[in-house]
Every structure is written in structure tokens, then in C-alpha cells.
Length: 297
Image (cartoon, rainbow, N blue to C red; front, top):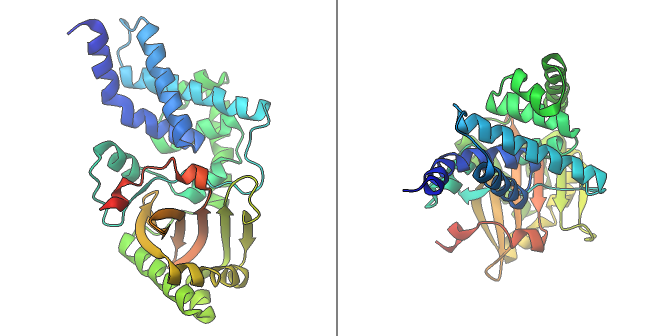
């Protein structure tokens, strides 16, 4: 085995972790893959003879690449306008997945509602929060990446954490209970049961529907009564088309099929037995890029 092959094998050992870091930083699976590929290119050109912790070195490289990508979004005016639902990670409701890498990413994923909040953070805040709170990277290392002092890096993460805790509370951990709530929501939607919908919706629930940048159906609505009214439009879809349970970013969700094709993916955040957030991706261009091979089973 030559040095390039040896380095490639070492890199593959860290690929899943690096992709997880990049996905949380960017909220885009395609951009996450680009960031990981850039890390490989940099590794292949670098002298790593004195690198003791290759995983840490690669994490830093990916973080720098993602930070530059986030900053470029702002510079070029590419920040999502209006309602934007990040790319979901989808798997079978039972949790078993034939692809070990996809299964690992799904098991370690964060909710769509959290990713929506992360999209509102400044790039340095997002990096500090993701690296420290989600991956336990020390502030000394984060400070070097963002070009600030460790105290300033800690403040960046603290500001981000307050935003996250206020807008994206931690969901209930019991997946079986989550599924019960989702099933109750679907049944009430299908039956046109307005009171049944109100029973499973948090009073301050938020619904975000992303059908694409130019689609009239893209919207955000808040409040249980307003969301329940919107959900009743789901009655026709749920009756006429196939609705499949799925894991969406590690939480109970659904995939709606129309004529054998994916029509929408819905992730739900459930807290205290109530739905506090509903994030729906119905952009056909982005849906076509998702890994939904498990639906063929």
C-alpha cells in the first residue's frame, strides 16, 4: 500500500464524522459533501507527518471550509429568503438502514427545527455552537478557527445557545410516544377532526412549508388554530395518496408519495406530547436529491 492509499483509508475512517459536522454547519447535504471533498483535497496536499490527531485536524479543516462557505453565502446574498427548510435526513420508521454511513448520520442527526434556527445565526456563532455544543470541541481550538480569543469564542457559543433554547426546545426523547402523536395528527387530518388536531398541537406551534424559492405554497404559519386549518388541507393528500411513516432527522415524521414519487417530507418536533414545530419540504428539485432508497422496500 502506497502513502496515498494509506492516507485515503485513514480519511475514510473519519468521513462520517466530517459529514456530520459539515451538515450541521451548512444544513445542506450537497454542500456538506463538497466541504468533505475539499478536506480530502487539502489533506492530500498537506504534510501531516507531525499531526498527532488526524481526526481533530480534519475536523478543523472542515470547519474552516464550512465557515468560508457560510460567509460566502452572505457576501453573495445567498442566504435563504423567506421560509427555508434545510435538507432532511430520512430513514425507515423502524430505524434499520442498509447503508451504515446513512444510518450513522441519521442516528446522530439534529432536528429540522434546530437547523432552521441555526440558519439565522451569524457564521461564527453557528460554528462555535456546532463545534462546542454538538461535538465538544474546546474553545481554544474554536478561537483559532474564527480568529478570536477563547473568551470571545465562548461568548459566540453562548449567544447562539440562547437563540437555540428560545426557538428550538429539545424534543421528547421517546420515539414511540412521538409516533403516537404523529399518528394522532394524521388521523385527525384525514378525518377532518379539528378538535383532534388542536389536541395534539402546541398553542404556539409553527408550521414551515418550503415548496421552492418561487412557489406560492411556501409559507410559515403560527398558532394551533391556524396550523390546524392548514392541516385540514392535508386531508385530501392523506386520503388520495400514500403516506409513509419515516424517521426525519432522527424524529418521527412522514413521507408523502404521489404516483410512486415523493411529494413531500414532513419532520415534526414534539415536546410534552404536543407538536411544537412542523417542517415540510415539498421542493421537487431538492426532494429529487435526497436518499430515499429505503422507500423501495
